[in-house]
Length: 293
Image (cartoon, rainbow, N blue to C red; front, side, top):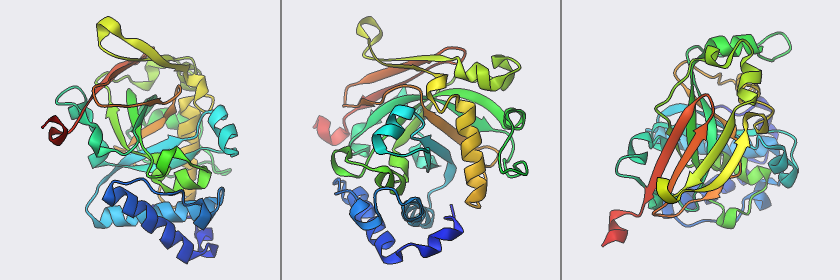
């Protein structure tokens, strides 16, 4: 994931120091102070430069890219952080815990400060590398490039202690990424009617915690809460990825952003999200085997 060419103007020493702080937090499994003292609260170039350093380290360690995630899609969250745009991070194969989610369970010790949110995910059938002359992608082009629409759970995390994050902190920290779960229910885009944008904006989501008998609703929302529509979030990411020189590719998974508030996760929790027109996705969380002993 190359950074924009303008990152040549950032303070590279500060970028390296911020990356080192986040890497140490992840390696030592100990949350760290925010990195905004090094790169600023809202310096987009510096924040993505840090993310790029982390990405290069991930690739060098053998991690394989499976897609991207979009964050900060809700207007309320943007207002809270004082930004007017979403952000993105990179998904890697070892972040996909779909098989564990309803099997042995996802070990909470894989994360530092986990929270969960329900999202619409896209699996791409085609590369998205040719925007229109104004740098955007039309809804019809996006619909043709989508192989499947999938209910998903993103288990977000932060290497920054207490989730004390600004825009710069979360972007640098790979958009506060953790793990993700894809549902087994998959829909083709035409299931949502001739206007995919409107169809996805109209979906509703409810997420519960607990077993079926005593499940408690903990989050709810609509497709329109995700940048107006999950398809619009995809359009933003596709155009941004082209500008960054690393377009979205066929086969990649795109997590389009939360449909409702994120919820803290603890060992023993079970979550289920239902999204109209898509179906459901669930995850169970367990302590590690060491904690069992």
